[in-house]
Amino acid sequence: MAIDVKDLPPKYQAQALQKYMAQQKRRGPPSSPAADGQQKASKYHNKPTERVTPSGAVLHFDSQKEARRYDHLIALEQAGQIRDLRLQVDFTLQEAYTDTEGRRVRAIRYKADFTYRVPPFWELSESAPEELRKKYGPMGALVVEDVKSRATRTKEYLLKRKMLKDKLGIDITEV
Image 1 (cartoon, one colour):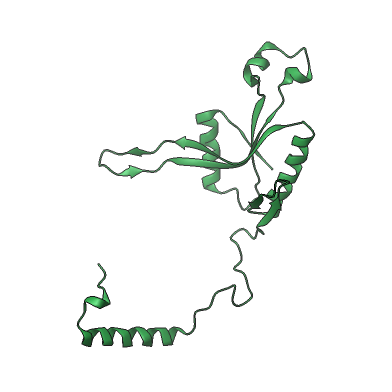
Image 2 (cartoon, rainbow, N blue to C red):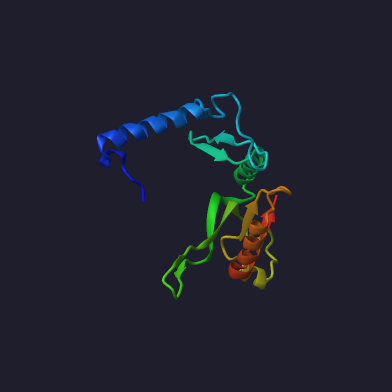
């Protein structure tokens, strides 16, 4: 519970102000990495990158590798090899709930870097078996991609990858 300085008598307000000013003086001027001309190194040493779409929208990517993969997928979509390219798609792995003691437990979600669909096999070949037609449906197979490096393959990611496979039957393609 914090006390508001305005609620104190004038004598104690002045004392609190003097103490605060002394603390600020000891700390020195506030410095920020941007003011020093240095950026704080990111956790995985990635370099955030931007791309501008033909419509003028600016897309922000966490790494150069992810931006390059986006460029490649856009080229594939324009060539007609994939369709319905989407970025940063959320999958709910476990719904939120309230436990027996009344505490709220948050949902577990996985956010994929990219999702897209590959054309159905029977569009490529008239002799595709019926089970493939049923499995992939008229839209084609859903592909879920995540751009990963050795450092970003965390325990949390591996657990969510397993949950996605178990709950929704979707394999993650790591690039």
